[in-house]
Length: 197
Image (tube, rainbow, N blue to C red; front, side, top):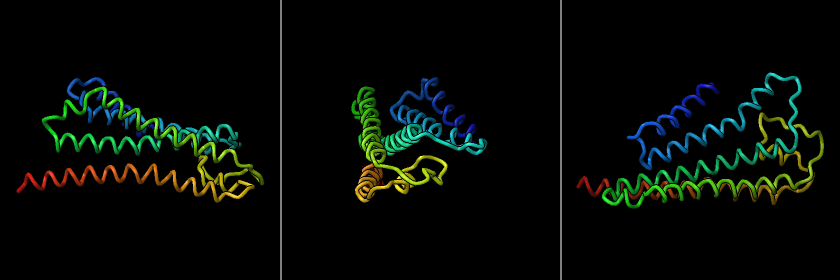
């Protein structure tokens, strides 16, 4: 299944790069979304598969922090990119005559950079906050990858501040893009409704 998923996403990347008819902003964002999915899958699945096959299932603290950082960063970047894609569809439907001017190549790249910088910056803060805590006990995580809740469970200190930070970050990563997507589609639905009258 992992290879099928990778193949599908890599095929999308290749087709949108090769086919000259697919050099529009929509396919530019779709290509980058598929690229994020490839990386996102590679952050978790190879180590998970090796742990299923290996007798020793140890992960160093550095490897765990690295996996968590990229997991959160790519997930955040993906959420923000979905909001960017909704904005692209809003411009295409609500301002079709100005679409090429508004969604220029440079503006698309800027939107992509904002999505990536947002995801990676938020992840850096949260991962740093998690791994500054002292860990004690067995140091065993009953999970197939390094996620925040299992790491909070291993902490020796009070984790309320970390849990609050995790809640705020999740709200930023999920709620802000969701609201942007919702607003875009409300405007799209409004435009379609007005055209049908």
